[in-house]
Amino acid sequence: MWLLVYIIFPNFGRKYILTGGEPIMRDRIMDKKYTLDDEHYYGIIRDNIKKYRKMRHLTQQNLADMTDISREYICDIENKHRNKHITIALLGRIAEALDVSIAMLLEKDNNE
Image (cartoon, rainbow, N blue to C red; front, top):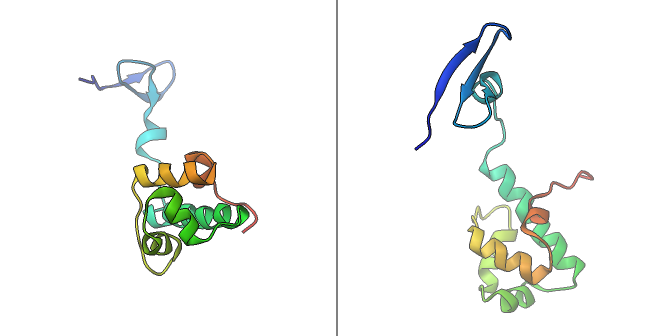
């Protein structure tokens, strides 16, 4: 069970949250606005799967055979118009087949 304590340190003039460990600045947690949604990250994953598959000269069928996933499912993952989401387990299988880390599949290509 986590203990959340909201306190104000008079000497610092900042609000902190204690979670049983290091104090965390409240402003960094509660006031941060996130503008990127799941589809943004799925798009990065989709593009990277396709990029690394092509770099290794693999067809969708080759990748499907290596991962025990249907070619149609691989096609759906890579196609931005199909909105197919991928589980972490499948992402791991694809990363292993492409000989990359899951983190590499999540890296945004800055050349775009």
